[in-house]
Amino acid sequence: MADATIIDGKAFAAGLRARVAEGVTALKASHGVTPGLAVVLVGEDPASQVYVRSKERALVELGMNSFDHHEPADMGEADLLALIDRLNADPAVHGILVQLPLPRHIDTQKVLARIVPEKDADGFHVVNAGLLATGSPGAIVPCTPLGSLLLIRDTLGRDLKGKRALVLGRSNIVGKPMAQLLLQADCTVTIAHSRTADLPGECRRADILVAAVGRPEMVRGDWIKPGATVIDVGINRVPAAEPGKTRLVGDVAFDEAVKVAGAITPVPGGVGPMTIACLMLNTLAAACRAAGAPVPAEAAL
Ligand SMILES: Nc1nc2c(c(=O)[nH]1)N[C@@H](CN(C=O)c1ccc(C(=O)N[C@@H](CCC(=O)O)C(=O)O)cc1)CN2
Image 1 (cartoon, protein in one colour):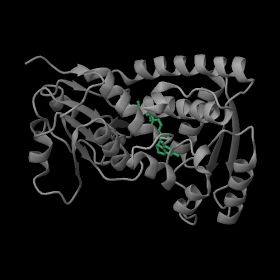
Image 2 (spheres, helix red, strand yellow):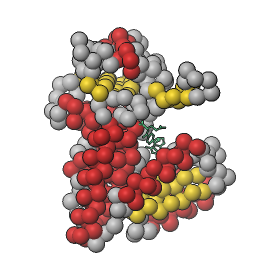
Image 3 (cartoon, rainbow, N blue to C red):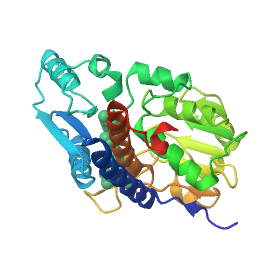
Image 4 (cartoon, rainbow, N blue to C red):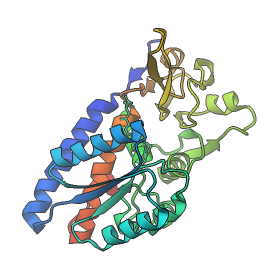
């Protein structure tokens, strides 16, 4: 059997960003509105700093406003909530992004709940989770699952009816919304996790396998149904062969899986780039809703 098609998330994300840039130009022309995202980073976590810089750069490249709030690691929870209140009230801010993880002394759920749902660019607020779960219009969908769905549709087409989908991982920000999206697309969805009996057997039944557990190369080649579409959400840094160096791997053992799957996302260069592209899309969509302009179809689902 031929090796799987490699799903090029980097190329798809570049195309999506170009479409967002066009949408930004159109919104400026039609309504005189420049979409703006407030990017809130608390502390100096090195990976978070890299992601936040990439988000701020993307906003500017796509013609949007980036309102940067880089706060010290010892910022108090009350001060962070007060900042969110100010951003909620600022009409130039259409979206608010609080980079995760937050320092341990801050209650993440409390902070995410303080963002008004219509500015929740990450789609983490319980109101947006509820809108998604009930299939209601206007839900802001979390960026990584949204990006994964766009890649699945690009690979298999929009009609996913009747496909067996397995989501490995049950986090609020990836696993659960991913399962909701696939369910809405008429897939038969299983959510598996660390306590699932016969995990390899469950995976082997899936036409679409989304791995989001954060365990390096946990999904082996013989867990995959021949021809399945494999979406690897994991981004795990592990020691490289060269002493002192590291490399990125996903939750799927790529070299084994590529021989069995029909299509597979690599790590890096698969789902990761879609996360930031979808944040740009969600920001544009939030600005469109605020202005009473049509929302881009890719965000409206
Ligand atoms: N508020 C949020 N916090 C976090 C999110 C999120 O969606 N919202 N997701 C992750 C981090 N993240 C964005 O914030 C993110 C992770 C990875 C990538 C990416 O493009 N990865 C590359 C590899 C990058 C590398 O070399 O390290 C890839 O997979 O190709 C983008 C964004 C946690 N926090």
